[in-house]
Image 1 (cartoon, rainbow, N blue to C red):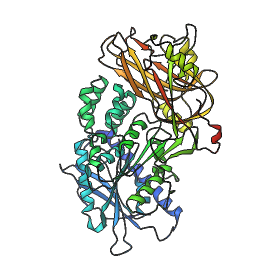
Image 2 (image 1 turned 60 degrees about the horizontal axis):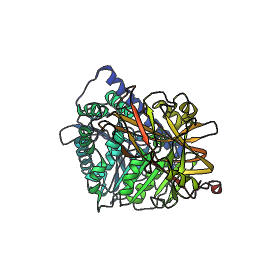
Image 3 (image 1 turned 90 degrees about the horizontal axis):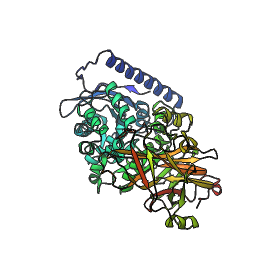
Length: 586
C-alpha cells in the first residue's frame, strides 16, 4: 500500500459554507476517498510482489496557491528513487465535472508504481479547492500552468521536467487538451470523454442540448461553486442566442487553440464513447483528423464517461486505461508498453453488435469504408413510408433523378410521433449497462402520427456493418421563422420496429419565412451491424433538445431534390471472424 507522506503545505483553504448540503457533499467525498484507499490497498495485497520493476510510492496531501491566491486541493503519488540520479515523468490528472481531486486515486496509485509522479488536483470550485468553477475558462487555464510549475519546484520528488503529461475524463479531458495547447512544457495529453468545441457540445446545429446542459447545471450547483456567467450563458443557449454564446464557448474550446500544437509533436490520445450525447464522437473525430502530430483515437460503446468508469472503482482489465498506460509508456518513457498490446492502429472502434470486437484502422479516413448515397422519394398516398434509393448504379436511381424533384411533404408540430430518442438519461443508461435498446413504433408514425412524422426505408438484404459518421443533406422551408427538425436513423425489423442507431437535429431561430434552406448535418457516429432494413425518419420535436417553437400551427416542408442525400459509411471488410457474413449491401 502507498505510504503516507508529509503534507507539502500546511496552508488551509478558506472555508466556504453552503449549509448542510455542502457538508453532506464533503462527507460523500471523504467516504469515496476511504473506499478508494481501501480498494487500492486490497489491490496491492492481491497483486503481491510483482517484481523489481515496481516502485514504492509515497502519498502527499497538497495545497497550491494559484496566481490569484485561490487554494487548489491536490494529492500526489510520488515514487521512491531506486537509483541516485533517477527522475520521474509526471502525469497531471484533472477532475471530471462535479467530482474531486480523489477521483483517480486508484488508477493514479497504479500508474505511480510504474515510475511516474502522478498529481491529481481539483479544479477551482470543485472538491476541496477554493474559488469558483469557470467552465474551463481563463482562470482554469492559468491554474494548469501554476500546478505544473509547483510540481516541478518540488526537487525532493525528482520530477523530469522534459516528460510531462496531462490527462482526465470529461471536464478533465477537455482541460487536458486546452492545457496541452497552451503550455509548451506538455509532451502528452490524454482526453477521455472530453470535448473539442463547447459550442458543438451544447449548441450543435443551433439545437440546445437541453437534457445534458441541465444535468451540468444541476450537478455544478450541487457539488461546486459556479461563476455567475455559467448559468447566464446557459440561459442564452436556451433562448437560441448563438452570438452571445459563441465567443464565450470558444474561449473554453481546444479547437480555438489548435494552432498552438503546431510543430510541437504533442502525443494525443483521445477516447470517446459512441452513445455520448454530451461530447459526441464525431466532434472529437474532427479534431483528431485535423491534428497532424502523434495521435490515437479510441471509440468505445457506451454513454458519457461509462467506458472509463469501471477502472476508477478498482475493476481490472479496462480497455481504455490499458491504452492510457501504454500511451504514457510509449511517449513519456519512450519504451514499449508492458501492460497493453503493441497495437499500432490509429483508430480502434468497438462494435455495438458484439462488444468483444473492435475494428482497427491504420488510417483515418479509412479506405475500408465505402460510402453509399441514398436519395429519398415521397411516401405514396396510402403508403406507410417513403423510400431510400441508392443514387447511382441502379434502375431505381434513374427513376429518382427523373422524378420527385418538385415534390414536397409537410410535417406539423407534435410531441408524440412514435419516434423517440428514449427517456432522457434513463434510456441512455439502460442502453449502456443493460443492453436495453431504444425502439420506435414506426407503424404508429405512419398512421396515428402521419401528419407529424415521416420515415424512409431501404431493405438491407444481407447483414452489413455501418462504421463511421453518417451525414444528411436536405432542403426545408416554413411559414415560421422558428422551427426544429430532428433526424433519426433506425435499423428496422419485419414488424417495422425501429432500433435507434444514430440521430441528429437542426434548429432555426430566426429564419426567413417561406425561404428554402439547404441544410447539412452529421448524425451520431456509430459502428453496428444492420440487417432487414434501414430507415431515416424526421419529426419536429424531441425532449432531448430545446425547441425553438412549440406552436401547434408550426409546419415545416421537406423539398425533394438532388440535395436530399443520406450518406452511410459501410465497412467493406469487417474484422469479425465471420467476415464473409458481412457483405456490403449495394
